[in-house]
Length: 576
Image (cartoon, rainbow, N blue to C red; front, side, top):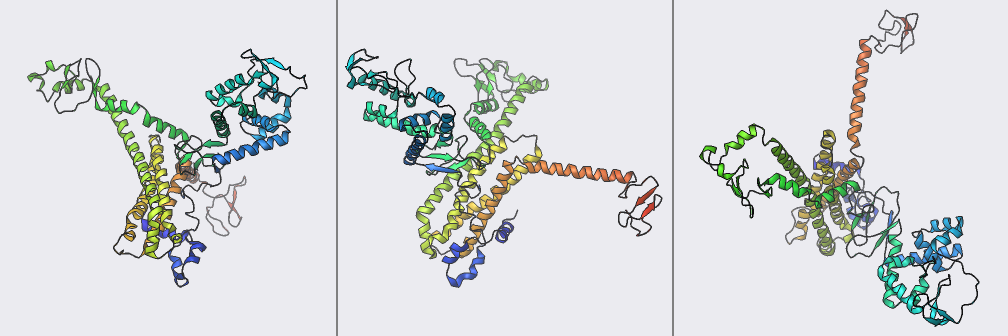
């Protein structure tokens, strides 16, 4: 598709690009220039314009916001169930911080929940004696130096401290700590833990408590970016699983890999595993080496001579072509550089299987290399575009604003173009993983996929070149050859066209290239319809109405009854 035609289509279909915000900022004597920028005002508001994903399907949470949500959840459960905040915290941790589940289970069977979680009810028992023997160290202490949960099993403070400290050192399991008595299931509350341990253990315990809200919650996950402390809460049902953290890292909510829409998680997992697996090393070995006839170790031929010597301790000398001992090679075999024994053996079928395997491995390696190289290249281009975008926002926008005597708000089309490039590079990268796993026997789908991918890639290259090179003219010291408004029109137009290309590409891949199947079904339907029509004509039925028992057929135009011997209506002369 010609780029000029694409841009003209974009101008006539997308409406006013700048809208009221930009038209109000423009001088009144340039109102006629509004028609120069006919693009949709909402077309570039998002960081990922080509995805069209809803922006309210997730919320990014800081650690302070997580703590606030924990406190609100504990307060809510404690108020509804009329229990202490410590017991409410134990309940929420047991039920994965799901308030509705806590309430449902509690009101369905309170006693069963208490027994399972370890929330025993206080009994109005007798007062403990003044001196109690600790059940761990078996020393007697005064009641003021003994501690116990609601179960009434007393242990000295020193043993309690050691017990809790060990549990905290072991990891997050300390959040479900139970009474030290082996026969008791009573839960140890947060207040008791905090009153027993040192400041270092308190920090660890609070950290485990904070992380449990995210790691035990089905609707929340940590951002997988290295060094990021943000969590994201996701609201399912929006269709797209791609989310973006405040740190700028986009990732898939389902598999936590880099954002990979429109490719599904299964394909991404297989592709990443293949990139890390040893299978490609074996394919390379099969395609570019041969086994030593004696020790079977793979050998790569690095020089032109056919005389190969295996590495120590084998040191076997053989011919690269026929793999026979070099001692048998001489004048009668055609010399050192032309072993005719190989061709003779090949004609007899001796090396057919080995050659077939080697050729298959070579083809597989070349095919994988083709897709991997383009996948990796687009990722590096995306990283470079992201760096250019950050540099543009930090340095060049103010410079461009000063030179063009325009506010930065009217130069938003430049950053929009770079955002579109970054997103399109990401999408294009994953389409190569999709293409690698596309079945080779589905030629129609493959041709359609390569067509829409090629159209999108060509549009992206035009946009990237315009943003990367044409913009430099307006940032340099020499005066530009073209007006800035002309550049604005070109860049905004290419951004709109490229977005459309990638929306079509993503729609095709997310539907499994169903347009190809629909086209086949329509073609088969038309073919069957044509065959039925021909069969009807051959049978003499044509389009005439059915002939009744008296041998009369009714005209479809005037409904006059005609004898079966005539081909056209005797009244209106209509020929069916």
